[in-house]
Image (cartoon, rainbow, N blue to C red; front, side, top):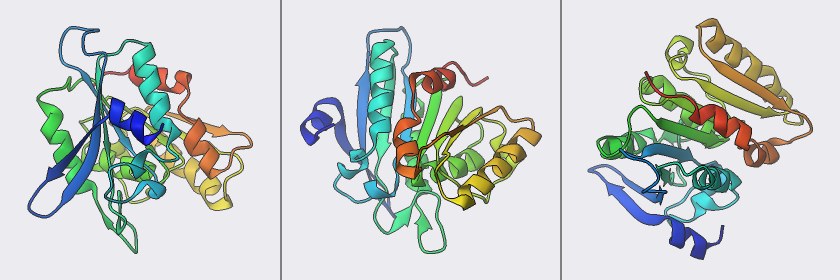
Length: 228
């Protein structure tokens, strides 16, 4: 999606607080398709989308187009939120960077009253997927379902994450460590009675997995869930 197309479909906004500034984009999909409040869809981008320009979070992020097009084609009444993480942070945090989930939680709170709380969904790829793991651990009763493409965060409680149905993907041609660790963390959530789908996609490396995981079949699985 070009910058012109982004401006056509997504309104640029920012969320300011005393300690942070969160650039984000919001798109309104099919506002007249269904009665009631729109569903909420949150997409958390990978590391190459970081910055403050409120554009880079769309670059090399084909997942956003897949989600947007699916919602349009299925006439789903929804709002898509695409926040941008600054260059000196990551969504989940790591040894070198602090987490930037606080502003994302504030963003969710901002839209809580105007969206359907039973139909809130979160998606993430790579660094964004790590952010989704941590967000599910810290906000276990927020989302109806989630999809994580090749993103990892190890410091979570499986019993907490198990509250949210989860679809996880990994490329068959990715590095050895994630191919070893991903089945372990998926099994931990399943052992806590979590509903988890897990696909190892043959032949795909890490960037390919982040781009190609958001198929219509996987999106249909996510959107069929509602929070009870």
